[in-house]
Amino acid sequence: MAAALQFLPSLARAPLRPFLWRGPGARLASGMALAEQARQLFESTVGAVQPGPMMHRALSFDPSNGQLKVRDRSFQLRQNLYLVGFGKAVLGMAAAAEELLGQHLVQGVISVPKGIRAAMECTGKQEMLLKPHSRVQVFEGAEDNLPDHDALRAALAIRQLAEGLTADDLLLVLISGGKPHSIRRGGGPCGSDRQWPHGGQHPQRARLPAHP
Image (cartoon, rainbow, N blue to C red; front, side, top):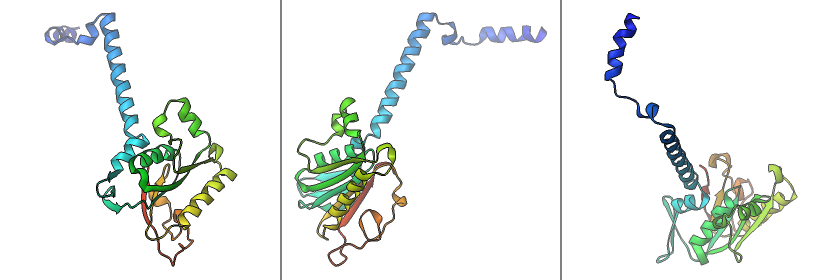
């Protein structure tokens, strides 16, 4: 009891905590403000890792001189750029790349999960969809993340495009869902051991993982 009596004067002199002494209306308003801040923080965080914004942070293109910069490397574009990719986020990445690079993109092939285009349309994510007359061919496959015939067709189409390139061509490789070092850096497309055609000359490759 004596200890309690000694504590009371110091408690009386201490500043009151506003939240504990607020009425129900004030606490409700404070809770709503906190919820709104949390929602804004969540949306800004998700927006920062969307394929489009990430592509624009990693790629820059100067149309005056045709210079494409991929992080710290520069490449000269002369309508000699090709694109391949695979993974969940690659559809949005390819859409952003085609919008940025325009006529310099000659052809592209990407492999994405089955149903992803319909899902983007249903959720109103039009910015993550390719334009109707896109030069990028989309293969959907690997339902439930399991290899299937459609995924094999996509891999063969990517291989065919890559093997047809020369040393004068540029190949932009978009990868989503894995770590860059998990892909073998062999002589062939997508890290295989197969040798490139045209006397072993490799096209210049700019790998751009979605989530490094």
